[in-house]
Length: 77
Image 1: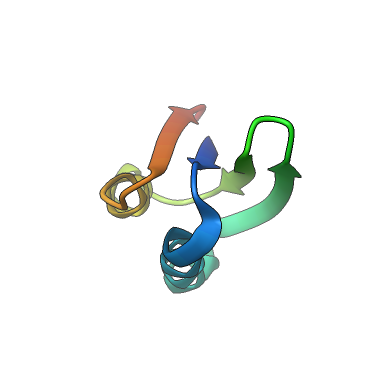
Image 2 (image 1 turned 90 degrees about the vertical axis):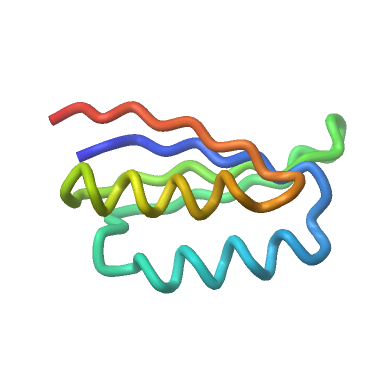
């Protein structure tokens, strides 16, 4: 299980790609919260995921390769 934080710096095209990847990994996503933080000009997504370290690593790796997206995760179990 892990907590994943995703920050999108320019929503445009990167938001579409992020949502495609999250859809592909929907089977390990337990919960998702998305907040547009207009004062900072970013969008923030918080995920709770439950999968293997390989699945979580693949998810965060694909997200981290998208331009204008930053990802951090904390694996808890």
